[in-house]
Amino acid sequence: MKQLLFEQIDVGSEIPSLKQKVDLTQLIRYSAATWNFFLLHLEKEFAQKQGFKDANIHAPFYGAFLARMMTQWIGDPGRLRRLGYRVTVMGFPGDTLVAKGKVIKKYQERGENLVDCEIWVENQDGVKVAPASATVSLSSKKSSILISKILNDG
Image 1 (cartoon, rainbow, N blue to C red):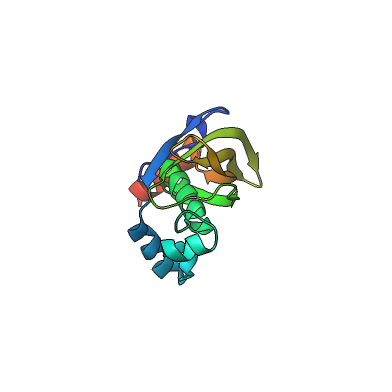
Image 2 (image 1 turned 90 degrees about the vertical axis):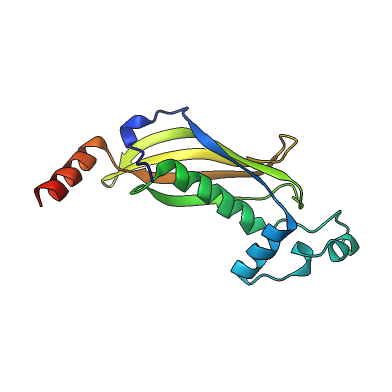
């Protein structure tokens, strides 16, 4: 995984987006992985009896999707320190989700290079369905050079 360095980003930098069309098979797999077999997420007929048009995308699915976007962006050894989100619009099989974001703050604290980000998930209509925020910790050029030197000098 490509390493993102603290010096490579600026406030206002966009995070590369991540796009995914959600289908019922993914929801079934997610249910199995999380041991959440509530029928609202699996069966259209059950969901319709509850007043929804179809099975619902699990709320934590959005968090996992956002975490994947962030960790793909920062690479290794970057660390996702904090992720907070809330789902404000229901999602259903057939929806296309797009995770997006931008850097809003860059700072150093307790020896860490931290970056705060405003992130979110939009649906295929461009509606923000899961507003979120995240903080990541990144290496700097100095620390990368030092690690490389230690590894190469052995």
